[in-house]
Length: 601
Image (cartoon, rainbow, N blue to C red; front, side, top):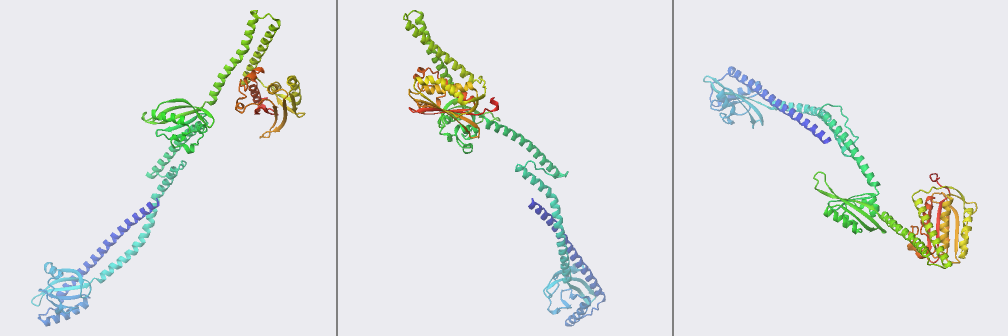
């Protein structure tokens, strides 16, 4: 904007300067012309006066030249001009400054030719004799037979030229002063015209830099004021639209960021346009590095890239599940839909894919199927045994009282097993559905386990298993005593059941602080039993999962005990873990908070 202000100032100055220069030249020409015209008129009057007062004496030859030359010198001093007497044939017979005999014939001189035709002749030319511009005026003069020719006066234009030069000098000084004043005035005018435009430009630049609070502060009602108001209106509109866009983007971004499903957007050229955080986690990629690149960058997921390629090439909807390894096996469901631009409705713009990790769902479905199968199998075995032995007894196939009694014992044992199974299933169902209320109360840990060890001691002594405890005195824990008993009855019973004769089962209890500084009680149930293979440890708490199915059934277990234990521990806001080494033994560690939080009471 400043160069424009300077250019505008220069334009105004040039216009003023050209105008002043034109006026000066015109005035100089007028001055020179008027001055010369005045000189000519004055010289004509002088010649006419001479023609009436001068004594023209009839002479010829050298006498005439001498006479007229002498008189011309006298007249030249009086008139302060060069006086020349010229005959009609152009012969010079007298001159106030030069020897007439050495002078050329003047019949062809401009002033002489004009004078002979018009009565008065004048001319301006450079005099080689005097080396300056001269004004020549000639008038024809006839004095009877005494003289017939022309009297010519000539004066130097040096004074005229000096007057013009002086005029130009005065004019130049005036021009400089006027130029200075014109420059100041022009700059003020240009500044007044460009300053509002500069303000508008600065505001427009701020708006282009996304500063939509910028406004033009002008109180004018001309075109510039209208332009400023238009800029302000545009900024208001942009600010409103930007807020709407930002709100929509924030809403969309919030939706994308908080979606549990992964979003993968691939454009028509096969480049990844969008990846939300859920998709980043599922595919172990970074949106920053993969956005804008080809979907082939996901080449480690061959099955997924094959589906993406199929969707882009065929432009069809896709609903498939594929297994990927991240590095653990994961089942992903991919739902893809083709996208088309709204304007034409036919121009393909890419594919939108929704990724869902259905691994847990499929695992639950498998667990449900296994649960139904296991329940059916577990129920079928005792029911079949009860039915078979009952039918045998009813049909009178057994006459021996001892055999009949053994059959009845088997029926009783199987019904007890069936009752335990049903009871455990009901308990697990209540626990999982949060229908089992917790009744928290202070529990004396030492007294609690003392009673429990007396109950389990009989079973342990039959297998000559040593029960050892390491429990500090006066240790209390806030818990549901019945459910706490169910937890450790299961753990200790399992430890005794899976420990060979002559082994050892140990219970240790200690209090400590967790990572957050909260008091907790750690229970460890260790045995010297058969141990659990490492491959089975991740599934040990699943329902009906058995490491040794034959051994479990012979011990009368239902396969639900550890699953119930895990759920009960979680209801106490605790955690359970297991460590085992095959052939050496197993340790179950239970960590429970010493005091339950308020929402658990």
